[in-house]
Image 1: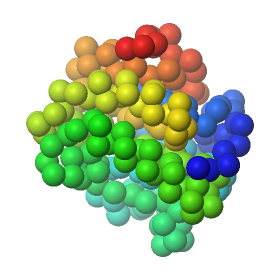
Image 2 (image 1 turned 30 degrees about the vertical axis):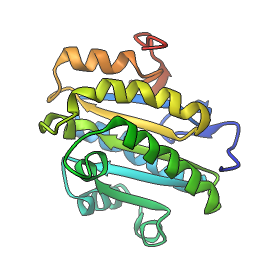
Image 3 (image 1 turned 135 degrees about the vertical axis):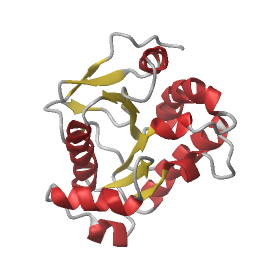
Length: 199
């Protein structure tokens, strides 16, 4: 297990948070999303964390390109696998089916391996639009999100889940907010007033 710091920075927020923070980023503006996500990834790298990004709306190489456009050169960190950028659909549905239990185990493994490899902690961020593609099991998305709150109690990987309000309907976004203890508001992470513990 990583020898996690008692508090971590998220890059785009002035506050510090405990490792294992589970954040919901609901956005409409793509450029604003990129600013937040880039700072989240950059701060993890600079704090010696293992960082993973799951991309859906573009190719992994496109993520590297827009990070470089924001003066964040992740190439060396990708080469040494400090930072990985992978296809979200393959990550969440490796055999074409979404199974929450499998993804929970994957998150635990990511956290454990980060410690074994000498990282201070681990953080991930995923574009959740893969769930709109009709993969079998996608209807368990909210169950999966709720389960992350249990995972981070024993394996405090920091996770930021991205929901595009231009693509997800309001009802699903509301349900997603109910299972995230934290949310992004005006570029800052705040305690989520919609969160329902135990959901």
